[in-house]
Length: 470
Ligand code: GLU
Image 1 (cartoon, rainbow, N blue to C red):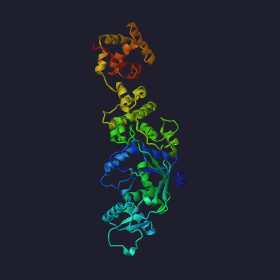
Image 2: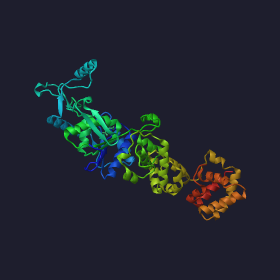
Image 3: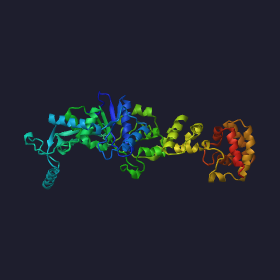
Image 4: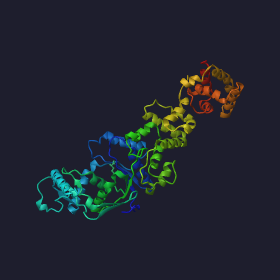
């Protein structure tokens, strides 16, 4: 199989095992698969690999769906449950038995262990070679058996991987893998191949921790005479220290990133760049990613998680948002974070002021705080210091000027400038108490911008409240 796109319509999939969270590595794999399908006008499917009944609880499955939905990685059609397809997996194993591509093996675990020990003692390969591979069915005992693949013993199994290149496995290094266990249940290796085939998957894009499975899975495709997918095994994500990503490196779950206040579109952009590149593009939209994504752009070296870069991209995406998009994103974040309900209308008014300086959604909300609070404004400790007697005097002097000013940014700046000049101080000396009066904080958007958002009456009332403090 070559890495060129086959003539079949493109179908990709994400096949998560529900282990409790949506890992960002899985999210990135899902994103790559979805982008690839979109690029080629194909379909992106979801299969839940829920055969491990102990771990595959409804809650864990729900966490996967929630993570994918939050990240905007919706899938085509209904999610497929691998566990529910067990009968089909068994049926394929029986077809393989009938066609001679598989055989019944009656060796017990003890016999296999004994085989391995003897092989070790003789310095031979410990790869199990079943004595039942070519046995006459007339000699079959009335005992439990497993079904094994009759794998080729000579030659090589070659995978042309779109990322890793040509991957060659010597067939004398692969055993006859089990397809059906002693209790008749299908193995994972069989289930994956049958499901991918039945779902029409044309491109298997997944983490390279599955690369060693590909040769074995290819053997099943080849035995069944099924069209093999294009394989693309992407290097796993590493932490900043170059080691495989783990909890030690910080957040690994998609929902943790959502909770930190990164907009989904920023995380998509960041994850797309984690192991894939398009020229020197760093900041891009979903539409651009869908137009550009290709397997050639996936690197062979593991990408390193870089939170600074994520923050930076997040800030750029927030700055590029329309006011209503920013409001929707902040509302979503606040609800997830269990914050007090956010007044969407007030936030929308402040949105143009907060976009440029916020790198996360909570930062945007914090900058919009001046527009969300009601009088009397409670200054924090730092802001209270800016409201000393001299400052309050200047604020009192300023109010008649503001009463008369036309309510534009320029006119407001001129009015404040006049009072500052009359006191022989710079604009900054008045800006600090104004920030304290209007927002109760020392770090805020520009005072003139805040005034235009708050409007004349509210601005004057807040200034008068503050001026009355000293
Ligand atoms: N269920 C596997 C995992 O979560 C993915 C299998 C595959 O993509 O083939 O790692």
